[in-house]
Length: 221
Image 1 (cartoon, one colour):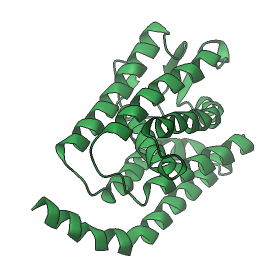
Image 2 (cartoon, rainbow, N blue to C red):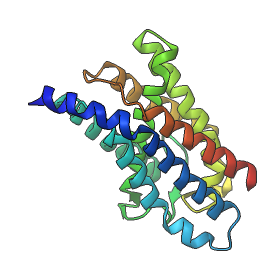
Image 3 (cartoon, rainbow, N blue to C red):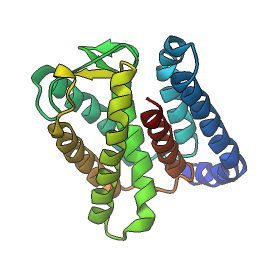
């Protein structure tokens, strides 16, 4: 049954890959215009949770190995991301002193539920991207963590500008990037050691469109 599902998913992935990439770039291009140039900024900020859900839907439509080890990884990455953010917000440890705004949607104990999904998406997509650049699993994990920190450098000023979150005294501490690296490295190590197929063809595109989106907004603002 599982092997049948895997084989039947290949034509879908090949047939709709270009469509999926096109939808991603279209939505992020519209979001870039809406946040960077339109007169309806609040409306586009309100769509941020929807955009995150859409991105993950497209991403995991192209995932084909749904064995328990993958499901465990996905849940752990989501839960760990949420937990680390909870610790960060409530103690100031890991990342520094910050609070979440309203842009990321419904919050539980001051933490957006979607933030765990965002960690999962970034670890999964960057983990796929770095596979072609290193052969050893730890080097892949290290490289994946580094490019996640690089993305966070682009995200931070954009996030503050559009009320994703805010920092104490409006200063982004260096500890934030250290914390990001540590958490990202732990989750990357898990990703690269977990036993499931890592051949999602749209995953590198998902990470790439994040880089372009936040780089563009970083330049505009």
